[in-house]
Length: 216
Image (cartoon, rainbow, N blue to C red; front, side, top):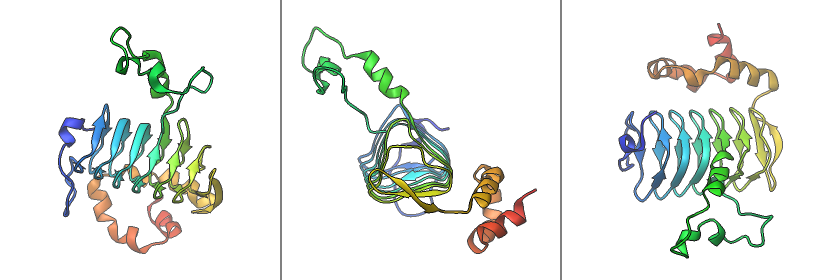
């Protein structure tokens, strides 16, 4: 994966460069990106690994997350939203961002380490709809779809479509047998040139016909 420094640029019309682009006003901290990635205008990423070809649209907010390849993340999505201490005398961040308020105390490093460890995982070839949320330590399986406005509090099976608050499976994107075969094919690991060579089949064939052509 490329470093943040290698990725810096301004998103615009035209071909996405292999190094990827970061949109105007985006904030990126302790994150890394694969090839052909795009970060939308005003988005914020902290402690995120973003796989090849994945992108987030405008004003997405991703924290403490591992995102696979070819993930489609819509505008205003929030993944890995940080939490507050429910079991303490207060919820307020003065108890862990203490240096903001006093000169003689440091921030609570243990609390931030705990937050960073609670990572959300987004699989390959996924679609996270507008303004959806995926909570910490939740896994969205390969090929899954999260509907707009959904709040995902539990793991999402591969190739499932979930919606609602809290999100529940409403149907499968592909039948279980097709989904399993697609995961085994793992086309998302193909080389850039191979993807281009097989573009007509991506565009024209059904998932089952695609599998029949390319399964070894």
